[in-house]
Amino acid sequence: PEASPAAAGAGPVGTGDYVVKQGECISSIAKDKGYFWETIWNDPANAKLKSIRTNPNILLPGDRVTLPTKNSKRESGETEMRHRFTRRGDPAMIRIRVLRSDETPRAREPYRLQVDADKWEGLTDAAGWMQVPIPGNAREGRLVVGPASDQAKYTLRLGGVDPVNSITGAQQRLNNLGFGCGRVDGVLGPRTRRALTRFQKRSGLVENGEPDQTTQSKLLEKHGS
Image 1: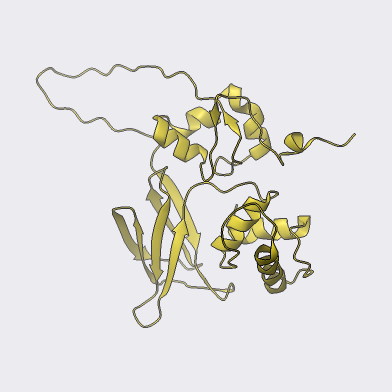
Image 2 (image 1 turned 180 degrees about the horizontal axis):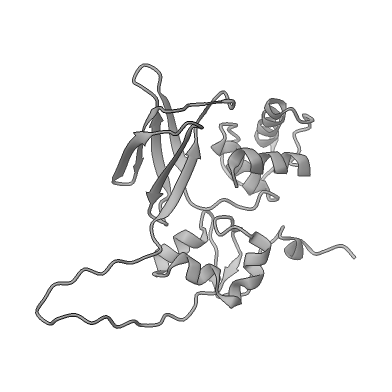
């Protein structure tokens, strides 16, 4: 018999009390609720969610997550003294590869990244990659890559992405890769079909404007997740 949409991961999965909202991922939920992301992701009650989604940054709105009971922890320290305690498990990491025309890496080029009030500067590596620690619940950032005479500027939509087999997941990845399809609304309309066709043409795929399995696989490859 054919699997149900939920069983195949095409619909919401999980049995917890917390209902995932658009753009949320395990890291952002953990940050907002005061957990380590591994504590939520590895909890046995979330085993089915984990087995279907496989990636803590890829959740579908409507997925249900179990938030484990918190355990208090005591640490010794002298009275009348000030102590600093470090919370492990945060921040999250953002990893981005910057290419020219989707082909040539922008290697060893300066970059500036701003996420909320935080700023980072550095150089991309030999393959055009950059990696920066950011808060788990960050939602938007601005990235500038290259010298003043040859800059590329990007607005980054941060947070989790939906599964690639959903229309919203395809739309999010298309937008992130520069194939603008407008608002992420879950509707396979003319603008999304045009974006899919442009992506397929650039990737050497059949240009049918459909988010078929081959196109989904290529979106995962190009997007990185």
